[in-house]
Amino acid sequence: MSASLGTVAAQSGLTQVDGEPAPGVALRAEGLVKRFGAAVALAGVSFEVAPGEVFGLAGANGAGKTTLLKVLAGLCRPDEGWAEVAGADVATEPVRVRQLVGYMPDRFGVYESMTAGEYLSFYASCYRLPRQHAERAVTDLLALMGLAAKRDEQLNALSQGMKQRLCLARALVHDPEVLLLDEPAAGLDPRARAELRELVAALGEMGKAVVISSQILAELAEVSTSIGILHEGVMVASGNAEQLLAGSEGLEELFLSLTEREDPEGPAGPTTGGLAGEGTGEDEEGAATK
Amino acid sequence: MMAAPTATAPLGNAPASTGRARRSPTAGGASRLISSLVWNPVIAKELRLRMRGWHTALLLTGYLCVIGGVGYLGYSGIAASSSDVVQVGGTGSSLFTGLAAAVMVSVALVIPGLVAPSVSGERERGTLELLLATPLRPARIVVGKLVAALALVGFLVLACAPLFCVAYLLGGVGVREALELVAFIFVGTSCLAALSMLASVSLRRVPAATVVSYLAMLVLAAGPFTAAYVWQAVATPGSPTVTGTGGQGVLEAVSPIMGADALLNSNSACGTGGLLTPIVGNLAPPVINTCGGPSQYTTNLGPLGNWQTWEATLAIDGVVAIGALGTSVLVLTKRALP
Image 1 (cartoon, rainbow over the protein chains, first blue to last red):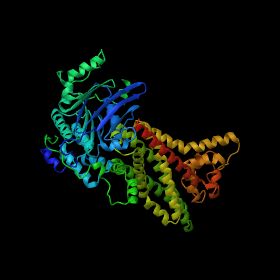
Image 2: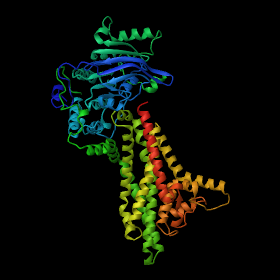
Image 3: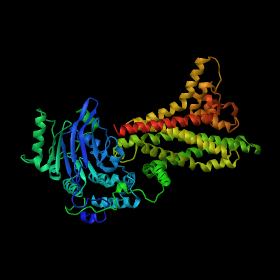
Image 4: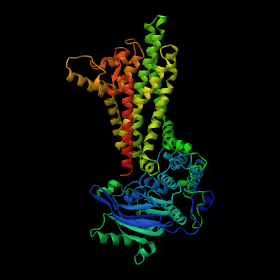
């Protein structure tokens, strides 16, 4: 519980890039379009994320964040445009993409009668990790998430926040090069959210490309090295966080100004703090009905 | 709480990226291929979760009570009516038939309940997306869940082995008959399981998938010979008992009930008291001759020639199972990558 990341590091199965993150692009999207019937969830989204970069994705409900992350995770085929993750095309190589990506959806369930250790071991076996390597990864990740003491407890005994952390551990179990986190802070208490931010920052420093969506814009700005603002399926702004936020009072103000400019009546109401993420997850249907 | 990260501490090094260091370089091509074919973490997960709950213990207990009860009642009734030692062989045969029929009916009632919630339940719980986000292909997920359900059915059948041994000791059944029965149960169960799997991947809710699975079972069991009856009534009104010929015969053979009837009766003397015979004999329409001796349980499969009806059922239901399984994989693949 009290082990620092440095302590965990000595035995962890997660890899890091030595020195500076490798140059290049870990994730690139170009003109992504996704329609659900007549509704357009993504209308030509383009952006890229370098290794070691933490890309914060902001957007109101139904803006297309979840659809975008699903496309990048190889779970949803784009109608137009293309995207590649660590060199793998999401449309033509979805299985390879899933091997390279750690994806945490905004809403998820767990196998309630499994223990925490079994849960992670099962997903490790889905990625075909060698047994010894998997056991070490499970041990390290449970320690990293502060769940080592819960290893043999069934998941129906864990709190929602603990399940959230376990799901994040699941996304990391195969040591992915790219992490796609959809509202990972939803359901976490303030302390756990702060720790999540530190963890995400540490993962970025290890050279992993992280795309994280959140409605808590102040926290998103704090953890992100670059930011994208998605509005009605269009990436209305993206770039280096410092440059993007220069001249504005913060991400919240920037977000409001950009989305209001695009839509004179204003969006339905972007959440800008408090219990962000709770019940705000969008899904395909949500995107489709927008 | 999560372990507090420090800005300078890396998370450490693994010998190789985990996702790419999974195969031993010394492993041979053949063993890699076999390992790749056999590897399916879904099977272990399904069996572990299923065995952990109380449902399976309850199911096994109830099932054994039913089969044991059928065996006891069947044996008591037969023994009471057969005082002659010469009839011991017939007693064993009848006991075998009764037990086999009870096992078939029980398994047929259990399998849709086992398979229908497998994928729809994952969807309801919100775990399907996480599963699909792994490199597991939909085919492996479907097959894994099906194999796990069939393994449990195999366990149920195996649990009755001692009762079948009694029939064997009474001399009424040989190894060949036992193997035929196992093959028939396996294929019939696979067919029902594959149809249930199709319902499970197609429907979002467990109750809907379960209801549709049981309806599919009913249609498969009763539909073909009902259709054959209608066919016969329309084609040659007034002709009471013609069976096993042309398309009508094939239609009859689709039904596992007909196959089971043919299998069990071809293994026992007609009218000596197999449990299925009186049931089917009463329920079946007049077009179906359920008690004509082994020679009448044949089905003409056109260019494939004459088959024993139960063998035809085995072949047809096997094709249905493969078709339903393939469609299930296609449906889940479409759902996995819309």
